Length: 386
Image (cartoon, rainbow, N blue to C red; front, side, top):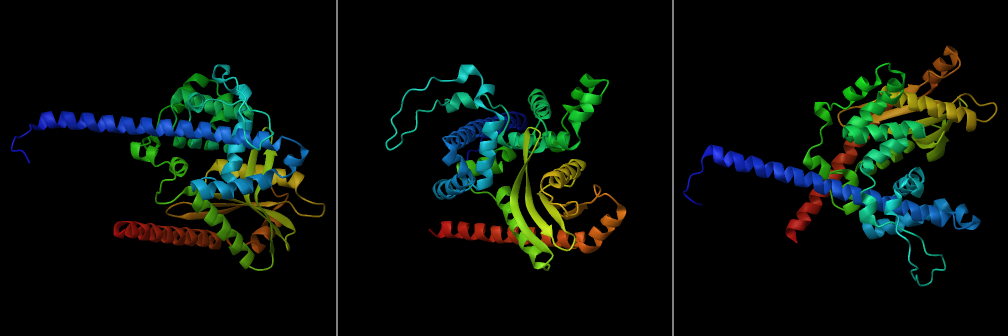
């Protein structure tokens, strides 16, 4: 080590400059990876849609295609290619069809020979060019697709997120607060839009957080503490088993049941039929805090289920919202849409206690995270020995 002393002011200047440079570079790298990932997922969605539209026979086994692709891609590339994620990619392409992509990015296709493939050549975009079209992160687009209820609402939030440089946290908060509806009704819309663009302290995303985006880590097949999609899948499976273990009242109907409201597609995590109450029970799992938008979304699900899924002689469906936050869990039934208080009281008396469900949810999350940390530690020890 050299004996030359550095002045505090000089060192502080170069140290701060390099720190800023590294943080900027990391953010830029994360944005670049995210953009290419989003473009790749759009193209995967395109291939899935176009393959399924290749004839009546193909359309009939669309779900089988997703399941087989999930197994094969996971074996080859690791995490991130579950059926749910592949469904998101298909939905992404359908939400942003080629007609919405700038014509300047379209490349004329050149015939390519594919051995053993009689399908006509498909015109593709160049990934690097296509990446410049999707200026928000993949997580942004997931929120836009899943949480908005119309094309107009989605376009509004997308435009404001681009204009204001919203982080995913900002976008999530604005959707939860029904900012679109409030802005449409406001007499001073410009001032309201300007106020919404101001970030709160918790909205800022650090360079480390940008790099450790779970979707980016899955795309690159890099390890982290855990993937939110893995945690959510584990919780859904345990909830399914737990409700069935409570007795003979619950009958399993389906998982990840799709429904279309307006121009948007939604999915409910679990769907049961309660034999004593003679009603459907819709279960929606969140990994964030419970908010008014979650309650409103559940009421929307219940209204849809009452109109399209309920059979004659059955009672109105009930919603169950489960929030598995890091430090606490919350369970809440959505009973406000029932026709009278007597029926609501009967539902409350027969259904499992909300506190019991919240405790099981919290216990399951703690056990899963402890097991995952243990597995990560074992992998690290094996790596050091090898």
